[in-house]
Image (tube, rainbow, N blue to C red; front, side, top):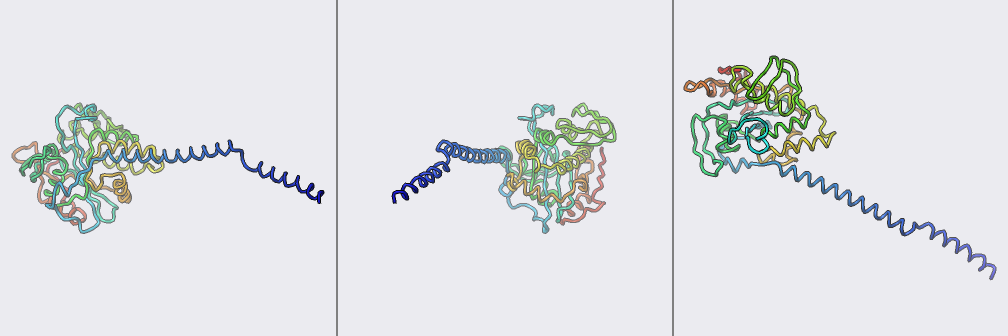
Amino acid sequence: MTDALTDTGPRRSRRASAGRRAKPPRRRRRVWRWIALSLVLLVLAAGGVGYWLYSDLNGNIKGVDLEKAIGDDRPQKLPTSGQNLLVLGSDSRSGANASLGTGNVSGARSDTALVIHIPEGRKKAVAVSIPRDTLVTRPECTGKDGSALPSAKRVMFNSVYSLAGPACVVKTVEQMSGVRMDHFVEIDFAGFKGLVDAIGGVTVTVDQDIHDKSSGLDLSAGTHRLDGTQSLQFVRTRHGIGDGSDLGRIGLQQQFLIALLSEIKKQDLLGSPTKAFRIADKLTESLTTDSGLASLTKLADFGRSMNGVDPSTMETIMLPVRYDTQDPNRVVAAQPQAGRLWQALRKDQEIPESAKKSPATGG
């Protein structure tokens, strides 16, 4: 019995020793706990940074509640799934816009106005430019100072923005066209320049030399890759082409719109989060939309719904206008062409050729 006890004792001792050796030393376990904790903190920090970036970009976007600002006095929505988007380019010279060489004019106007109609099926879009010098009837609105702004006839279209802001521009477009705007997007000079620079420029081709001392644009005939500053000059130039009027500038703006949309579509933003963030940062800091688009997620959802639209098939039209009989420096909507154009958009139908011909052909 003594031999058996003597024989089994050492074996238990060795197994116990082996078991103790199998456990990692306390110091090593402590190291692994710190590594695990650090990884958790890193993930939480990354999530926090992501949320902060999202909140920061989201906070950049300024939203306007059209239902509250305009009320019920609006055209009916399309009976189809078609959409109408009003795009405004404001010419404010304040803030970041002051250093862009755009002059010293006070206040801000809607330098560019496009009604973009996306028909049911989201395959082909139509962009209708409204000349800034068009004389319109401004509906009753609320002025920027909060006071009531009475209706007025024969006011320049681009003056509506400076007096009453984007909601009144939407209301003016709706009343002159009978077409309900589902959304609106406004971007200023600085935001436009920043967007173009963020995507690396836009390529355009011009068939004649353009030299405009007013805008600063200096291009020879041919193909050019324009940076943000040059792009801003391009869409603002008018003295270097056509008859020097706003009607000539519209052609360049429409050409650039197609080139810009084509550039955005072909770039793989999802494959480059850094570029996507840089573009979103530049765009949102100068962006105002209706409340239905006033967040990154809403903008992204709307953008994805437009994926089927090919910019190369987008049709660009200028609102048919004629020179005003009292002031040849102003234009008014030409009838019956303008009426036929708006009717086609209201009914989500193809625009007849007769609705695209403008008696005023400057540029």
